[in-house]
Picture (spheres, rainbow, N blue to C red):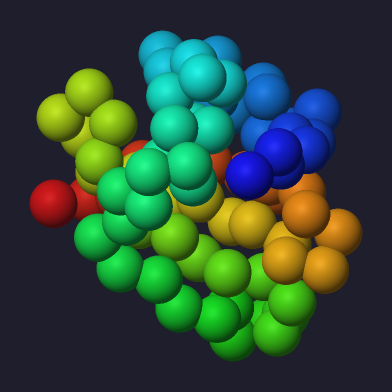
Length: 75
């Protein structure tokens, strides 16, 4: 899967101390804990995963194939 990463998502990835390669690996390996369709936008999937031992949520627009943002989940 060759997803595009928005500028905003790239900034958040860097802030979170993870890499684009780790993000892409989640989608390539299907290392997903859970996923759901966003309540605010039906074209966005909210994908929960673990990177470096921490839980994150990735917001991914399936129509444009763009990762919109990345943020940590509370335990």
